[in-house]
Image 1 (cartoon, rainbow, N blue to C red):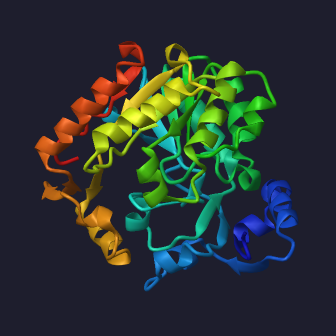
Image 2: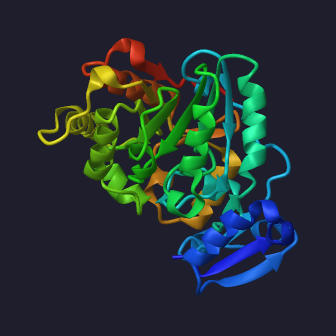
Amino acid sequence: MISTIYIEREVAESARYEARLQQLLARYPDAEQISCERYGEVFNRKAQNFRLQKLRPSLIVARKHKGLVLPSPPEYRIGEGQGYYFSHLFNCLYDCRYCFLQGMYRSAHYVWFINYDEFADQIRQRAEQGPSWFFSGYDCDSLALDPVTGFADFALDLFAGLPPHAHLELRTKSTQIRPLLARAPQQNVVTAFSFTPQSVSQSLEDKVPAIDKRLAAMVRLQQAGWPVGLRLDPLIYTQDYHEQYRTLFATLFESPDHPLDAAALHSVSLGPFRLPKGYFETMRNLYPEERLFAGPLKQRQGMVSYPPELEQQMIEEVEALLLDYIPPASYFPCRVPEGA
């Protein structure tokens, strides 16, 4: 899968990263290894083509020096306390056409920040200040590349030693749940699975596991005692979106093989499709043939989204369908302020 690995010189020469780095290199013994001073030399080069690189991305192993743990916007928080997000990885194994990463980054290469100890230090400092939520999965899928990064074991060990008021959300479309099933459930760790309707997933979510596979993984975690969450964003418009979401919810909650226990869900959130104007233009230039970008979209206050009336109509209709299945107390709508 990975044929070229760039390694920052500092990482290659530091004993503190040796064990984790050697595990990676043993996994890809035939990969070409290239030294670099800083990951930006490769990742931030001009005239890169995200679309072409996505076909065969390289891996860059780096140390993150700043911005390891950042405050999350209030509208994206779940539960009480201060919210934070952090990213041990830039870019994603999957290729979702609506994903903002392809508009934000010049490169589709993966950047893996190997200095987990420094992430842990900053998370501990913030957790000691009181109730808090830490969100993983902003710049990547939390679990999709876990066989490479070993992130899940690190995160689970870390949060097992933190006060119970410190919570972690692992955001994913993956079925890589073995590290969780291999240990006792932790009530302060929520694995949140993202879903869109079947037709949307098939047309816009390349390489993402099928809905029934993700559902089965989610149910296995539920049955093992792990808290799980359901994430329904972005809402994507199709002419029959009402029926599409009705069918999705029937699949999730009425599956004859493995239905979700709606009452046991930790949380459910729903949010609109919105992109910063600059990201949208970059993405449309990358994929000029993509119907999503020719849809009923409007620019307002620097963002591209569906017209306000359509967006509100979609939210209200999908909310109504959703609340036929879940307790209202577990529902956390993502209300994005105008201009955000």
